[in-house]
Image 1 (cartoon, rainbow, N blue to C red):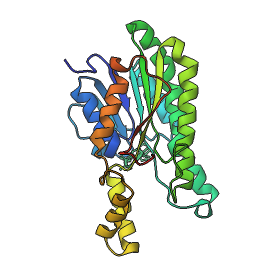
Image 2 (image 1 turned 30 degrees about the vertical axis):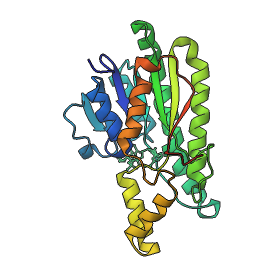
Image 3 (image 1 turned 180 degrees about the horizontal axis):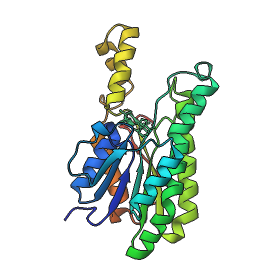
Image 4 (image 1 turned 90 degrees about the horizontal axis):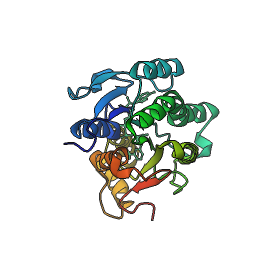
Length: 251
Ligand code: NAD
């Protein structure tokens, strides 16, 4: 039997990259997966129990969605956006957009789903699990040109610990995952854009690799395997943690 047999899981930004890998792995391990993304066309795994558009910046849509889904065991908050630059490149609009999509989105989904997760944990006698996608670029490490991104990902660690401590006694666990650099469509896009500035895609890719102690970046599946662990009963005593998966980048 799969490691997530009998579990009901919600995954945001499940269309590509890390979110997609998590949704795919959850389904592979036997979970009933509710997959959503801004772009429904990307949600093309027939193993998903439900696949639809959900904009995590839309409070009304998130609340309506949670009402329809009902009780769940696992909430994986993956949606996020990388703003490039220092404080001097970040005006208030950029700040607000990043905090809305990266941080307030998780406030919305957690607020909408926590009551149902507490019920579910009580009914099953197990634990419910929230998994928030943070980053090594957060309170863990100051990464160059990731001013507001790093601030949002640090905020995620703070809210993760706050939720973990408030609900530990009611068997709701809340953990963050802090990846280093992971191969994903948006990373490829960022390297293509950087390539135009530095000369070529290959040069841009090399500059990413140079920062990597292991000489490579991660595959989305390597992050998804941590999400499977955190979602599963194997992690029943694990809460409030920041699981770093970065090949040594933050060392
Ligand atoms: P990605 O950036 O390639 O894809 C993001 C997905 O989010 C897309 O499918 C997009 O349609 C969706 N999305 C965008 N806005 C949305 C919204 N308002 N509502 C719902 N969905 C929306 O994926 P990725 O690079 O794997 O990043 C996923 C998460 O992992 C992000 O939170 C990112 O910050 C984090 N992360 C990524 C890396 C990396 O190197 N790729 C490293 C650390 C953390």
